Image 1: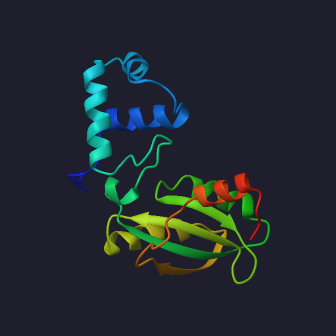
Image 2: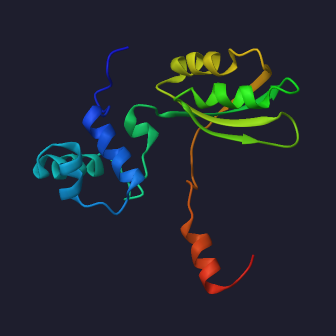
Amino acid sequence: MPPQPDAIDALDGKLIRLLAEEPRIGVLECSRRLQVARGTVQARLDRLQARGVIGGFGPQVDPAALGYPVTAFATLEISQGQGADVRAHLAAVPEVLELHTITGHGDMLVRIVARSNADLQRVIDRVVGFDGIVRASTAIALENPVPFRILPLVEQAAAGSGP
């Protein structure tokens, strides 16, 4: 598959990883560790912020800005005693963003991303292509009107109030 025009390169990837591991690291130290000029690091950071790839210095990376605009949730039913093997399988799939074990219908809930609806089939095939997975049901997310957030909880906890 040809690279996406908005995709990041290896240096962008190393820079994002460094910031994720050490969010308070400075530009100068980043340039030293990555062995590139300080101006290069600053320009990369500015470009990544302008494109929305980095939304904060946690960093918050937007899968759509990386070329994965399709989000789906798959509910998986797994064979008894296969949980650890299924977890390891799913952890090896880059498009799996989250995995939760759940109650109710199904055993696991997986958030996955894909480059397109057509690519989603490839991702689903890879996710379910494991002997420990018995059945899968997938739902495509159309919109994310309340994206992942934590600050309201922080503010509530700081104020000492409950729900």
